[in-house]
Structure formats: C-alpha cells, structure tokens
Image 1: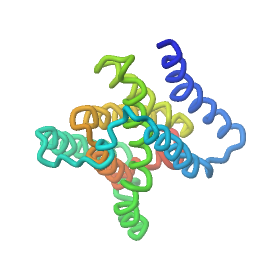
Image 2 (image 1 turned 180 degrees about the vertical axis):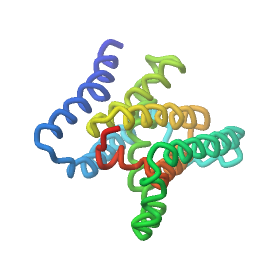
Image 3 (image 1 turned 180 degrees about the horizontal axis):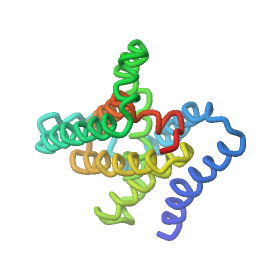
Length: 211
C-alpha cells in the first residue's frame, strides 16, 4: 500500500515537476511530444502484461451509454463559456488559428484526438485508474487524477494551463470511470482540445504564454 502511494507521488508529482525544471533550465520543449509517446508505450506494455487488466477498456465505445448525453451537454455549455471568455479577454486571439492557419487547424481537427489525447488517455486515465483505484475512493481518485493531469502541464509555466488541464482531467477521468471506455474519454478530451485551440486559448498550452 505504501509503495503504491510512493509510486503515485513519484510518477505523477515528482517526475513532471522535475521535467518542468529541466525544460526551464535548458529552455527547450521539443522532447515533450516524443517523450509522451515513449511513456505511453511503457504504460501500455505494463498494462498489457498485467493479467488483472481489463483490455476491453481500450476499445469499448458505448455510444448508447446514458453518460454520453451528459458529456455532450456539458461540452456544449463549457465550450460556449470558453468561447465567450476568449472573445472577451483576448479578442485578437479569438478564432486566430482557423482564420490565419486553416490548414494547420484542419490538421488539428483530424490529428489531435489520436496523436495527443489518446496517449494522454492511456497514461492519465487507463494506467492511472488501474494502478491507483485500489488505494483511492472515487472522489479522491477524481481529485488526484485532476491534480496529476494539471501537474503534467506544469512545464508550460502558467497557471491557466494548469487550471484548465486539471479541470479537464477531472471531466475526462469521470467519463472513463463511468463508462469504462478510454475511447469515449479520448473523444471528449479531443473535442475540448480542439475547442481550446480554435477559440484562441491554445497558446497557453503550446506557447507557454503568460496570462
């Protein structure tokens, strides 16, 4: 039990903070995306070799699950709120990407859910739950998952990135826990990511902008 707690603190607390410190020291973030996929592969191998792991969570897509309606409704409400906040606080950035870089925006629409949201889902949803659900109740698991996902973005060095991703981490983890579907949580994550970049807030989790 103690060993699992220490593992949680090390992997999802110390490691991302240490990585952020290294990134700040060398002022280089080019390794972040390749490292994400390396960590994803490591987690996938660990899960795959664990006989207690339910592999169905990786490909299950319960589109008729009652939770899907909640996912859609809260996405509509929260994406509208994101659009209004961005338009009000940073009008010059609002819809900047589709207006100025339409090809990149279309590439983002197609690629972000699978190139970025999917590996994050394997690490911060599937692996996280499989390893730490035995030591955390539902509420603590959601809270710890949100904090862990926020800390994963501490290298961007601004509180907006950490706050947005921590909140998103809770939402996506809630979807995963309720439906036991990584794909559904990934689609939800991808939709929010696309909305954030479309409405001009993506600079906080890409360019490390200061608020």
